[in-house]
Length: 226
Image 1 (cartoon, rainbow, N blue to C red):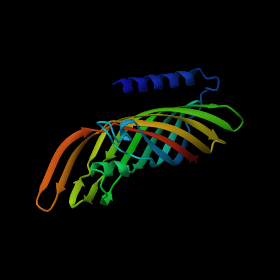
Image 2 (image 1 turned 90 degrees about the vertical axis):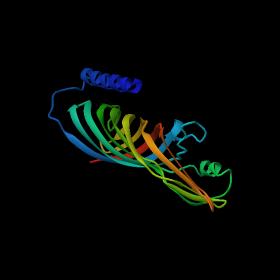
Image 3 (image 1 turned 120 degrees about the vertical axis):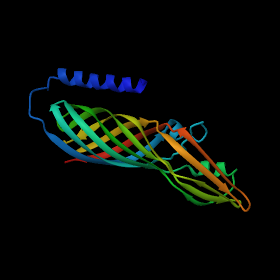
Image 4 (image 1 turned 90 degrees about the horizontal axis):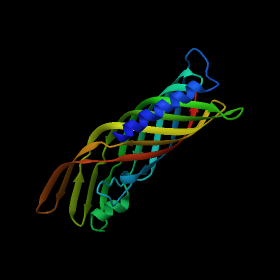
């Protein structure tokens, strides 16, 4: 709930800033469409290999699309849809096998982030502007599927999907109303099912449970506006 309050407070601040901006004036709404892509860097427990909620995620990539509808010159409604993929730390998988080598396939975390919010913009030069965003929405996540064999023991980890409230904050620069460079902070905490099966020549063991997976990601994006 604390992050919900932070998000609401930030949205209110952006609206107030836009309302008192000297550039604010009545105008018809206009819309712009953009696409972005770049690095997706996991943070906190999502990147950890040693915490009780380790995600063991490594830096991946994200692509997305957004639409912005102006309210006044400084303030817009903005909607984003972002796809992010993060692989799994290979050393973490090796640690789970007791440091032994393994063969097989290790999947990736995939997350979808449909989000809406507000964007505050301001010019700082003839062709350069800055912007700040605050958004809320959904995190739609899928856990990695793992199927590996080590020392004659096969381990399979089923993939499951989950969803949770998501928040996002961002900021960046726009050049010539066309090109953007942006940093975004995304977060959420979905609860996943889990099913682990270990099998050998004369045994099979299956364990099921549920777990919360804090999912924090920093995006470094470049984009283009149409």
